[in-house]
Image: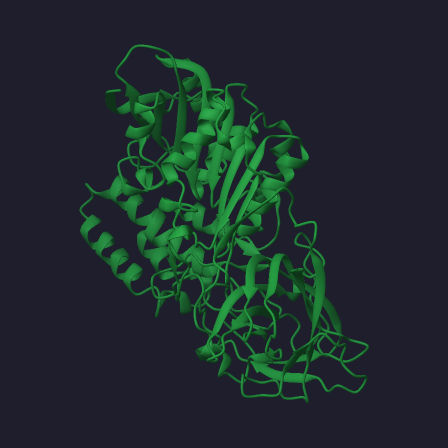
Length: 577
């Protein structure tokens, strides 16, 4: 089937603003389902075509609409992140359902922000929108994009603002200005030096690249809002799931920065009775290949050869064939959950999440009082610690934070995401390291992960970070998952409350989820520290705003692990025959 390409097609919104889209359609007359994506990164850039091949889908009998969001690239209006996507998404779906050649059945696809635009469009409940396929998607601006349990996702916010949003906006809005060459050159310099200069600036509100660029200040300021306010609630998808009329096929990664949201969306829509499927690979936010971080998971992990069966475009076509065309394909016979089990490097299918056979097993922290660094005496055990097990103490200095080293990241290239060797972290005395005995048999850990700690701090506010790693026989330690809690948010995101210095607190830390087999001869390890910077901004330990101030103090941190305070990580162990 031959394909027609139309560029900069006008799509009018309810307020008269014109958005622009590229359209791929079959040459043959007829009525076809329409598949839409809406992105802020440019409909003519590689972002728009990295996930699927629109020509192949048009050849298969679909109309593809690839649209610039309001205020971005060729589209009119002013960009106001997130909130604009609800009405604009609904209006675009309505337009697509009535465009020439449309049969009135609409699907949507896209990753990251243009996964969010799918949720925002679906929130209006337009009857024409029948199926979506969000990849590495977030559904809440506060707990997922801006913050994690109160800790600001500074690494992502700074790099996303500068490279992803501000640079294109300068090109779009200032390219004819006499000041443009100087402004653009300075911002390019700031982007290039973000990793060893911009991230470290204090206070965050005076972020130099934002001041120099002088574009999208409201977007940057919104990300600095450190309470769960009405502004954050207004862009959350959570209140809208019940009004959605869509079936959803989600795709995520164990090392994606939005993994938590991807799983939560799947579970919520499934609870509401929608046809819902999910794939989770060993991937990061933008790498869906087999070589991720320091590991190679094998070609079956590559999204272009998924399970050695189909590529990303085919994956999308199977879904839309079933939901928009009513074609009976093999998708109907497949279980709704497909996850990649790291360690063994195999795909597994399942019908429920968490897996019904899960045995939640506590691994207890223990030591002789000196678990500092991997050279200390920290132990991880199935056994509850003794009554007199001494606490561990370390100093957290915001001037010398533990630097980000792999994980669920969306940052500059200096901080690669995914599974990364941890020796540089585990040599530090401000990192407590607890390691199990050598495993005599494989240990599969698949499901949600949490840690429970009993903690004290000399500061009125501070952070605690927990990381799970897989230690290989040669001593290589590879990060599996991590989590953080900012203590003032331990009970509420809306009403933060400082802690009493020296008082004892019991805290739960969410490490999200994973699927990893710790092989025979390996060991399980847990790190406990107080920073993962610049992924999360430094807690300055003063109790004042960590975004608006620059003063800091060193905190003395204490982790208790005795019979009365059995600090542990709770692992979802999958029994094996």
